[in-house]
Amino acid sequence: MQVVIGIALVLAAASVAGAGPLDTPGAMKALNCSACHGFAGQSAGDTMPILAGLWPEYFKKAIADYASGKRPSTEMEPYAKQVIQFGVDDYAVYFGGLKREPTKIAVDATAAGRGRAAAQPCVICHGPDGRGDRAKLIPDLAGQPPGYLKNQMMLFREDKRSPGDPSLKAIKELMKSLSDDTMSDLAAYYSSVR
Image 1 (cartoon, rainbow, N blue to C red):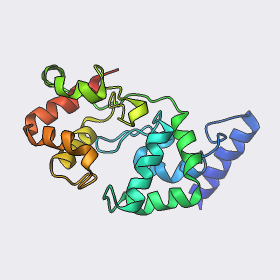
Image 2 (image 1 turned 120 degrees about the vertical axis):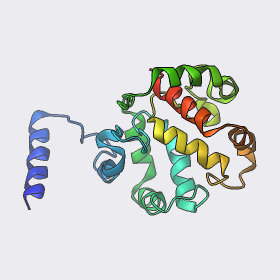
Image 3 (image 1 turned 30 degrees about the vertical axis):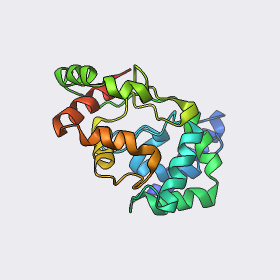
């Protein structure tokens, strides 16, 4: 009951003060995402991606892939279906309109240096600073939590992220050639990019 009263007071205060963080389209819908991805998509954890600043078209593709099972995740599939039901465009515009704050998870500078040196094959798709390619829906890796980045590399290596997708064959082959230590270094590097 106290939580409900607290939320009501915050919402009332925001409406009195004018436009606030919950006034933009999709903000109220996206509150359910904050349990894992942090308020306003600013994940504080090491294993959850930061959604703030995510390109709307990339967000929509990821949600569609989770909802259809193309990108398997027992955690995300039901939420992705909910996002589609409630209006994926509102969520996508909301998260896309937020400024991404880089993760606050500290990384070892030596590991990040090794990762930078090992990142040359990644530059082909993700660019020299890991900012991705919006037109090709290649995501921006910069400032994401290192644990999340390493986990995604491992999922690619094991063909558990978008299994069987022929468009991801090259990255999956690359990931198979990397040691766990090199993946950790790459994750540290891309996480440290500001």
